[in-house]
Image 1: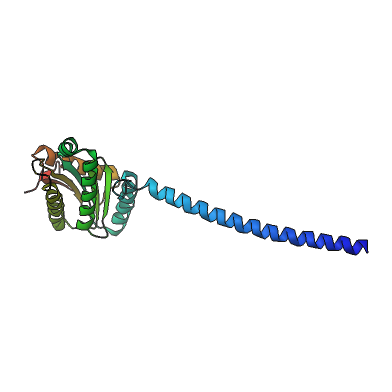
Image 2: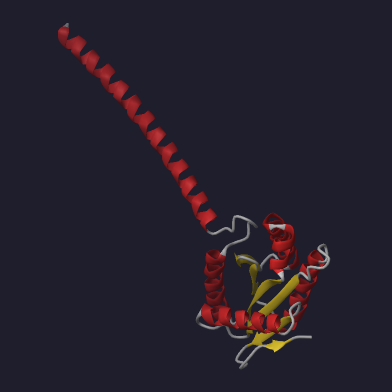
Length: 216
């Protein structure tokens, strides 16, 4: 009788242990799923500008590296634009930084509405934005820049007397370079050329040219 009782107790205990193990496995699976969700969210936040919701500099550089590799494989052109807000300090000084932040949000929306779905718009920091144009033909570069300038200028007109607008520098290569730094340097140099030439305009640094050229 005692042996039968002992076996019964052991069987009940083993059954309870199996139930607990299954419950523990289920809880562990739920914890792991939640952890993976949190890690994914954290990774997404690490690549997103908190003010505008656009990709940040890190994400932009990653996408640029991938796009250059793709462009080399497929022998397609590549183009990026740097956009710097003209006289942004005037807005911050006159209306405050909260108004300045709202203006940057409006610019981010305008850029996203202007470029194609395949393009990548990003906020690099401060009042500087960038756009990666996938497979952009040379003939399409100027209209793209003009549309960006017009959209930002229209937003700036909401603040009379502050002379808000944008300077845009574009770098275009028919054959994608090996290193993204060359493309970045060219776009930055073109943007600086537009800025020093009077602002509210754009310059293009094309291919193997020695310097950027201001566009009408």
